[in-house]
Length: 222
Ligand code: DX5
Ligand code: ZN
Image 1 (cartoon, rainbow, N blue to C red):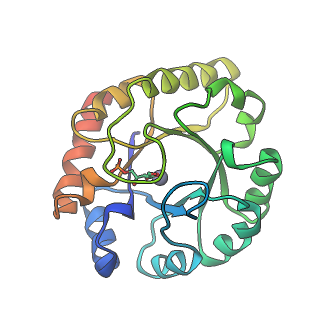
Image 2: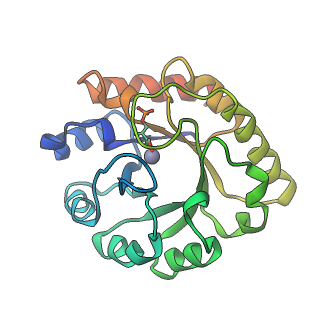
């Protein structure tokens, strides 16, 4: 079943609890939390204190997408704050295997993220360790960017590898997922759809989440 992960990056941070509740009513089943450090990506967002606050206002899993350097240093703090899924970038981890083990050791679901320029096949050896692979379909750092079309080939390649290797990791897609792209993203094989601007951008997250999820499920024949 395809799932919608509202990304709070595009939400109104002054009313975060209400925004999350609305996205949940609209069918969001996991909350996507973008953590940026101003080094790995050219933007700064939030850290464990905000995750801790979110933990108090929603029962949904919190999917923390770490766009940071030195992720290992912060993994214990995210666990402590109540994160459920943690993804780290292939491009930012010198010892990716160690980082994934550290996430699992802290009782969270480990995942790896790849930027648009990073090949899927580089992940071959660590695929058995991950709960999901996150395919960036924009360059990370900002919401509301244009979907990069060749991401569809990467989703298809991951789905093929999953079949060939007999694995069960999920395929998550992040960036530019909206009404004009969602059907193709789902048909390429994505299971977890992150959407920021398409859910929160127009100020009616409940309706917009519901409409996007409906379009996704129709495209998936669900
Ligand atoms: C971008 C973030 C995304 C962002 C997606 O670096 O990782 O999660 O919120 O935003 P949209 O859906 O607006 O492209
Ligand atoms: Zn993200």
